[in-house]
Image (cartoon, rainbow, N blue to C red; front, side, top):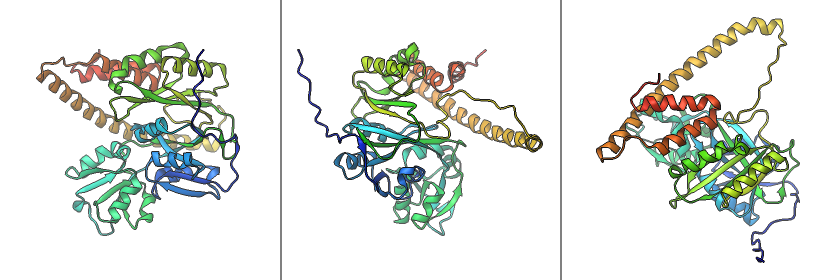
Length: 401
């Protein structure tokens, strides 16, 4: 008989933390994370403490210097936030209280009097760089990108003269005496970032707004993300895991960290089966708990049924043609953005093929292609796999029939 391994992580007794609360977030002041935190009821009357990194924020929570930490975890364009996912995997016994979802609009911030022609260096969080790359390539092709722990830290560096411009929210400018030289510079309109409010296991801050409808897990896996395609594809095909979202990031040590989202509360049988299967197949996973998705809408990558309403009024009927024209204009903008992105992907794929064949290797990587098909199917549903196949055919130099 095996002796149980004692839990060495300190866990407070379940119950509500008396307010006002101390809430930390990825700082410094002026980040999207702070903005997301201020949308939650917990922030009202609380003391907000900026932290330099996600790991530092969770450390403050574990030591008892903060009651909960607000951290970005996923962006619909740039994907999972690696720093947060790795920090959650390292932190002792973290648990998610709830989430927030924020639409992300970027601006180029400079010191007053700086013209665009004088910008030689641009700083921002790596996720920001992934979302404005096409704009920077078109407007500032010679500017050097300098990654920063947060967009607000990039703004602070601009204020201090360490770089010429920062990619951040326009609202960040006022915190650091900067001005927005250009606004709305993101390559994809409507992108959103998902944020998690995390505490120590057993802690609650205020009663939940509504019942839990999402359960998340995190853990380490051996091997880099590119080597896990077959394993993840196999999991995604399992009937118990059809609604589960799986994301991997490098752990910085040659391995990976997996972040998984299961629809529903862990108390629901279907969710409990999914969680149990994941932990059986991937023993390194641990649960971050169940919590409510952000109202009023879930992140776009999670598919949910849509309710159609037939009731219309005369006013709505009169406005419909104008609304349709406006929405069609947006579709045209999105199509132009998609075409530009596809052209970049095509060139990048062909460059990879040239490198592989130049070194005597095969031009294609079947494992990599399986991973791409699985990702598209997960994010876009049944049509996603077909779209991925058409894209792969194009990038191989053959047009799909």
